[in-house]
Image: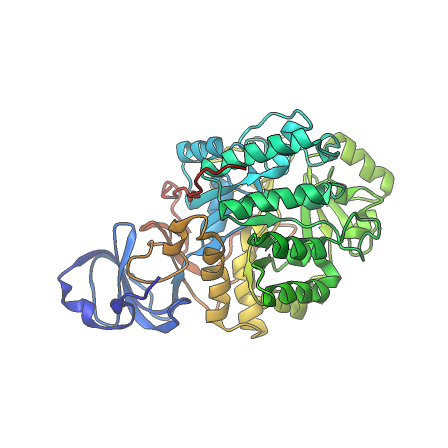
Length: 512
């Protein structure tokens, strides 16, 4: 997007416009143009219409002196798509949260449901390879993600080999999903590690032909699982080169664990050869997923776990640290879709490691936000606020962006503030914008861009969520504006404001 003349000039004072909102006197950081200076921002309706040094007249004025004004953060990897989960993310500076790794099926149902319920922030979905595989091979119904994107991952039915006819059926269904607005194809390959590599190639070719990314949870690495069909990082990078697909490596930090340097070297090597590979990280030392999934079997804990023992696992619903392999098997049988933490490394002694992860090149920040877990015996109203104590999640669902700014910028200086903002805004926008041209208006503070804006105090912004108190909102985010409407004002959530809009793909049909 070309920078509007008013993005860094004072000539917008003479246009006679009275703006709906004026954000006055903040340090405006636009990662695309490189603007980093004190400016006034004018908003009319749902668009930014002026960015300049001159005073602007506004019906509503936000005093941003001493604060940073940046594009709203864009989360490419958010499984927590309900109203409550999106509210937590808004309080962490997020204005767009997309479910791209797991995806949903059918996407048409998910878009309709979100629109009917309303969302405080923008939303969007990829086509779900795993859901369609569960349907075609395992006979599971398609719910549009109503049961949660991580549901049924522990079932063996969908993880078996697919016949040529089944693969053809899945490809036809994926193509239909793209035509219906999916933003790419989400591929949970790591949850079905015995899948024939040829099937993955076919799905990648479909994504390449449609001009959309493949958002991939890779298979385990050979160091983690010597018996794996093919090394996950080598496969992902090789298929990216062979098919010319835009391959997005989901949470490269948690799937690579202590082998991240080797994986990153592979990614950089294939990029140097012209392949399109991007990645993402979250700044935490524990993962979370369905306890019935492959990763949580007692014989598989070594793949991701810090020690490879059941004590690496905490069952989220009760907070129980699993004491033995026998107890882990009991929980897997009783609640296979129940969410659990798995310790990847010790966070307390790993601040520098977390900061270095955030600074990886060509890597966006993404939360991997998790749907809420409700303690037994309680009923949760999705519109309830503040959130009750019986609601739990992973702290990354509430604090990824505040934590990134605290650790990578303020505490370690590994990233400058503009660099960190780019990883939270422009980089994720560019990953999706070929599939969804509307994303070209996000991740920027420029006239003509969407009025998705975050205003925060760089000296005190921080995460507040912990593993014991996982739904504590971040602090330091003074204002969050979505499509021109304030979702967070003076640090307080505006509970009845639901201005979120769908982000849809623009793929046209083609012949497979």
